Length: 63
Image 1 (cartoon, helix red, strand yellow):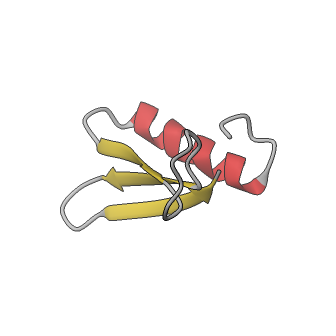
Image 2 (cartoon, one colour):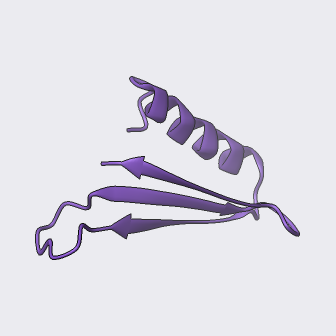
């Protein structure tokens, strides 16, 4: 995902580049599994960034 080989890969790397340039910004990733899926691979990956007061962004990437 983070190799810029697709449109979503570009967005993922843009988020990582922003975080690297802005120390102290809160970010977290949440794995989302399909209902009833007991496997090890999430269906989606949610990337969340809290960059300041009322500056919350969330993007859900297909896995």
